[in-house]
Image (cartoon, rainbow, N blue to C red; front, side, top):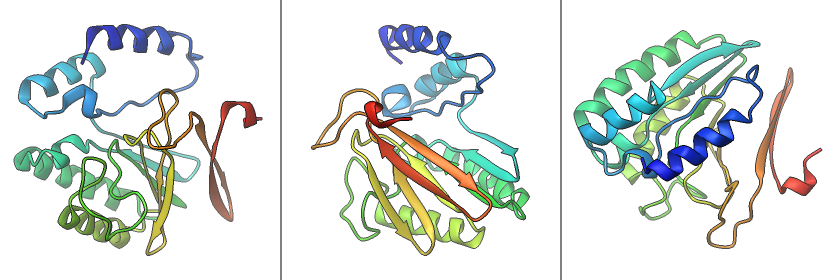
Length: 194
């Protein structure tokens, strides 16, 4: 993690209302390439690399995509055991929302493998797991452009950037509204947020 970026992050986080919980996950600028040293540095700074909590009959689970993208099999396997346990514990929740840095895919499960998505075998493995446990949506970032897709009833939302857009994207934020009869997600430019 770049010290200048860490200082900017800390300054911005200090402006967030302390009553608002904030959960962070590692991204490619934090621990990629995935090494024990980079991972330890992220844990020292952030305290965790995955999370799970429930609120208002919804379960929120965040996991590290860097070890998956970089093929760190022992770390991924350990995280997968934890993830399955959390998904089992979430059964009965109205919605199960997952969060990670790298999207599983952007637009189609059959799109080519690249820097901005999971490998084809990994995306199928994880999506089948998420389908088995009734995951409602998977939220990601990484691409600096907003995407929205669906696979077998699972919504896949790739948030666009708050900062620098890429590939025709625009800066904005995702607004997720959760109700008794469903949830919606809209990616809005700051001027459109009400």
